[in-house]
Length: 577
Image (spheres, rainbow, N blue to C red):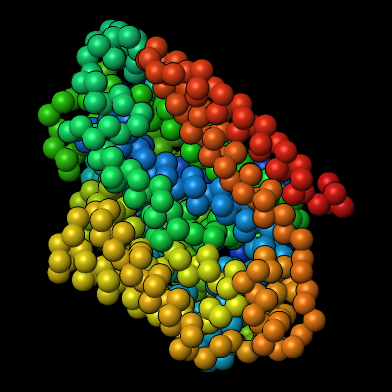
């Protein structure tokens, strides 16, 4: 075991004390499912947005980034940076639509958007597949990260035993806190983990064996510090980069970056107090996730390349943690252990609550045992969280090898789903049958292109995405349409862009209702956000390595900042400010 000083021990215990204090202060006092899963729709933009960031900052994230950088350098991060495209699209095109829907979960939208038994079937099957099966995959790789982290701090202990205690603590406070308590705890956990990683990166880069940023650069192969891929070996292939930016963001379902919003991102959007809070909270999430956090992880990962050049692919993520053994100051071990615990617990709590919201609100309550009291459904949710935690433990211990491998599997297996999640907001002909077909097509096309034809990632996604989009659009003219009254109610309530809905009004001989959506402003906001984030990341790259076109990076960064300000100001409802 690493010899902890008193300062390390205090920092290790610190998050548990704060969590218990926040649990007492912000735990759910109202015993209702709406409070437990949605915080009564009263969260501020900062709490909701920061909670989103904390959830995506799982214990596995720095390890996965380290795996990427050790294999493909800084440019390899585009395998997740591309998700910023879908993130800003969600902010400016969909966040207000979600809030207007008034749904408790994103799956409840199915009942608002579609009609018939097929809608009930779709809602139920998605609740089980996403809320339980896919949620297990996500929690499995989060637990896998902890199994890699624990031996670094406690080499004499059995990692799986410690993980059991962490899971028990996570289930305990998740059950008591509800979404409100979880969100406030997430705010603390995010800043603890973020500050810990910043300090870790500072001390790692200034190790005597590294010699600061100049020393780090001089010891690295030039391919490792490329920001944009250039097609050379050891970095992300150029054609992969283009596929990520142009296809993957709208085609694949991935937790935290669902096309059109969804999952726990939609849950936090729906939990905000008004449309302005939904807009600003989701914007803060995207900026913090893609711009504020990455560089400390990147620097430590690069240091690990120098110190531990011969790690296997399976063990490469551990390089991030092994740097802790290289002469860190007193307190650093305890601080980083606290940071990883905070990151782990925030993700665990959100996914347990989110998965239970699907299984209870969208499956058990409407289809299995309707008409029961809220206290009954809350008891079911507690049981669901315990079962999920137990299953995710066994999956991590016996069913996974690398974190990055789980990422890629999920992206490939869901690459026919994303298109329909966007199209259902814009095109009235999309029905529950279309979305059911998307969930059938996606894994089948994955098996065809990836397993049978052995097409490599990300070309497999290109084939799957385009094939599924064409088939799904054609299917809308073959399947029965959604009940017109349901469609008109949905359109009136959420006020989506009119253009692709005008066929419905013509079909029903209804008076045309055109709501102002300011799509030009939404597009400006999306492009400005991408300019701000990518320009900012590139400017930091140029500044650190004293290389590249820093003036161009700063120009894009400042133009993006101006565009974001103008877009946000234009889209906010003055009555809610």
